Amino acid sequence: MFKASSEALQTLARHPDFLGGKLGMVGVLHTWTRNMGYHLHIHYLIPAGGVAPKTGQWTPSHPKFLLPISALQKVFRAKFRDALKDADPTLFAQVPKATWTKKWVVHSKPVGDGRKALKYLAPYVYRVAISNRRLVSMHNGKVTFRYKPNNAPWKTMTLDVMSFIRRFLQHVLPKGFQKVRYFGFLHPSAKKTFTALQQQLNAAARQNIPSPANLSREDQVSENTPIHKTPICCPQCGGALAYIGRFSPRLNTRGPP
Image (cartoon, rainbow, N blue to C red):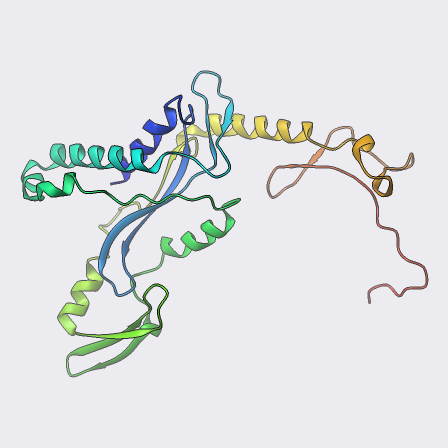
């Protein structure tokens, strides 16, 4: 599933009619629903752009559009079908033929700078299908636990012990399985490409530093204001910092304790 979905994304991203570049992706595997049902899917966090294969230049995408979802659904379905057929023909023969004609679910939306999306995905890296605090009771061979459906109040579900254990164990991954994977220019083997991309974007950010002539009169830098010839970069995001003015303390006001 990782292979088919990542290749589908890269195939469309390389097409000149869409992005014309190679993506960088972080994928996180998620296997359960809120009531521990089996629901296999992958969350991807993707920077809004790609690296042109010939020039190595950053190619930004549209702020609200990365790739066409309808085309991505079909490419993903076809790649998954072919990969399953090659990996296990016997298993492939058991899949209903209607599976390969149905509309597969692929969802994509812009999430700003990605911080909220990363915060949402982070717990899935080490979280298990259910925590102890959701367990309500365990009596007479029955287990009752709480779960919260989407946009609905909390509910409870009661299962016999073996059914509960079965639900839980189907989300335990094989030993050594990597549930978080990196692709494109975010892959560990692409350090040179990633470093060159950082330098390129930092240089572009420096060029966008506002000059004193473009600042308002209140923000004009005085002749005595120290100006760094080489812009200082933010240690968190790598963006260039620009000195635009100084806050002067007001008279007759008490400073902080």
